[in-house]
Image 1 (cartoon, rainbow, N blue to C red):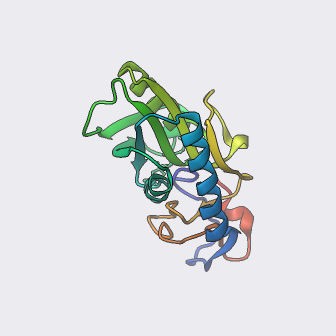
Image 2 (image 1 turned 90 degrees about the vertical axis):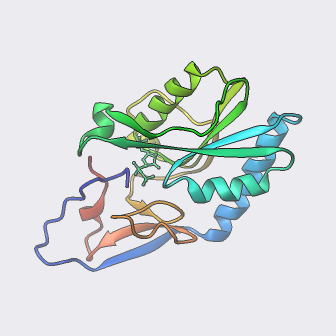
Image 3 (image 1 turned 60 degrees about the vertical axis):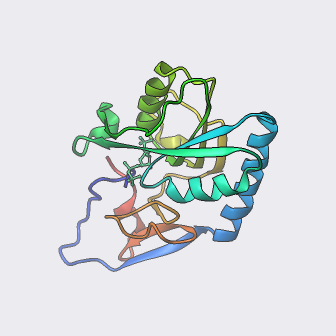
Length: 198
Ligand code: PRP
């Protein structure tokens, strides 16, 4: 839940939640096919090692991995943050390391969303120290308005506005990750109440 660890609500009663579709499952799948082709075109003869960040990146990783032709392997890493100001304060912490070394490999970091960029900045620094042959980044969603860290993705599915989005791996209090689409979450009738805040 990167966009708002603690969404601020004014309502005293539990609000009604609803999700408005922003990107359909069909569009997501078509875009993933395009990204997969582009990645293989950029690295025509190389085994590719996809590294996904738990938990949100899992669906993107599995769909992307199955769409890239040729040799593909993958691994997982998990990071966590300290409290509400995690990303903006840069306090990203490794909670689960990779199973295998990335040295000499062509590594694609696979993320569901690039938001402030603090997580990606941490990961890129970590992986660069481990001497991969190539290091690239694929994100399904990019929220450029939110950027704090000076990082960018090589492959972007969709650039989206600064709305609180759920689905396709993205959660609100661990829910909605299993939606096939990406939607904007609203609580009650006031969308402004769930605009991302950190
Ligand atoms: C999300 C997302 C990225 C990160 C992006 O993870 O999967 O890893 O936040 O945010 P940033 O650009 O501001 O650093 P989150 O911490 O919500 O964990 P999750 O994937 O388990 O939901």
